[in-house]
Length: 270
Image (cartoon, rainbow, N blue to C red):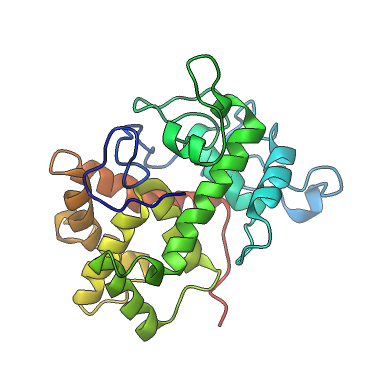
């Protein structure tokens, strides 16, 4: 997948995943409710290891087998492995399990992907056929997009020659350590899935310049009562412009936390 980190995307080649996307992420969805997952002793892992009872959406457990199979097939042996429940939680956040969901900016399907992203993952999107609405193909493609975002976040040195903010992230990893598969890793990756790796890295670079550990998500999004003073707001202002900066700050800041509330991950592996 071609990576474009420019803050000024063209309509069909967004620099960051959500640059042209206007669908808002709810502040706290109904699916983030107490009793997120059945206790282990009440579940039937031999039948459906991904059975959940988040918000009672009609399709909440309809695509569990697809999430398991397509996620595993597309992710392959890439490390860290993709937790299936995290992928399911991402789908809950993006489309509430509606395979026909379309955002105002044209992102579509279970994982809400753009036309360009879909084509980069080998899907057909024409005037007569749009494979983004095929659940198996959409989940397969969305998994690949998440992996590409994660890969850049884990290896900023691959783009640091072209982007000064990525070079700052490299320096931050040298000082604080590289993410290694726990909550920190997935928070950054999910933030990049929603707002773009360029947006998240810009925020990380600003935090690092302020002598803050940019691997701590709170250092990117605080102070919440004055978001305009936060590193993430500075990044959204640069990427999305003054009209959308604040709304994108709120969306991106909450997005990974909402997903991880349903699918908690462990601490980083030393």
